[in-house]
Image (tube, rainbow over all chains, first blue to last red; front, side):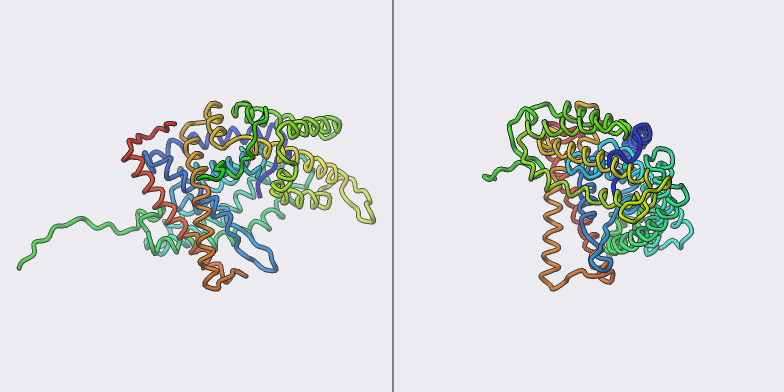
Length: 228
Length: 222
């Protein structure tokens, strides 16, 4: 769920906006390294993909369903810098054109679902790849691990922000337990979806998965003499 | 393209609000909402004043109330959260219809509802009266980094292409007799998301090459 207007007080909203701006500035510089002059056209369509991916409902049980948040997934697929830009643009378009998520809470939403989800998700993903055997089939489980941790980290960050700038007196530990409890379940769902999506792409087009680049076997171009 | 080909998020009109420069509208929205969010809950009359201001703007814009009401469904999760608040917040309790509820929780729920509703309505009014292209130009005038605005521009252009692709994929799945009912069907949906990514990425690459062929050098031109 997106944080709406009036959920956190104005100073906290402005402070998170500052953090978001700093994160975006770093990402703008980094994305040029990941995509060079392809940044705008490719990041644009990846952002649209994230937006559309969030529209697919994954049925849980009894008519309820969940959807992907996509922070860790995007970071694994296109790299952390481009991933953060895509998440930012998705959140900005949702706030400005769909009124989903408050305009004053845009900074908060970018920090929670962009900066924290992407950075934590990608860090855990890379860490897991270091530990797991160096095989292309390990990319999907590592991405899934990144997804579950990123969702929990977002929820914990939200609780932290809320304890600073929340407008309702909810005891800190009650909120933390409730939010983490709910979000571990959501995170497991996110992990399963991320696993299936990444596994599917890695089998078909491993070259497109940014996080798998170092594992894709590259073959030198060679010229052989053919004796007749 | 004979039919009206405005964006479907935009309500075509010629009111003063439609004609106002986009960057002023965005700055106005952000300023207005910052004031709303910063207003203490105890100042109830000021919220009534904000509502009246918005009401007048809606009337001036000529956007039908039913159109805005339909699009306000995005607020549903906030309503659910506000309904939970009186049960989980701490502080002195009050009896309402035999159930003891937290008084600060009730107050906060009312405040959240008021502020979030004002926010959703104000944002919808901006979206309804501003063409996405003007909105992007407005953001650029507000010194949003041009790279970010360019990405948003591509997203706005791709939005319907990719959601149409998604719809075609669903039609294809359903015409083969597939309906997703429980988590056992997730692998199928997940592979659809994967296929959507590959198709999107390849489309992005084709568009990039086409742009280079037409002299694109990394900066946007209008």
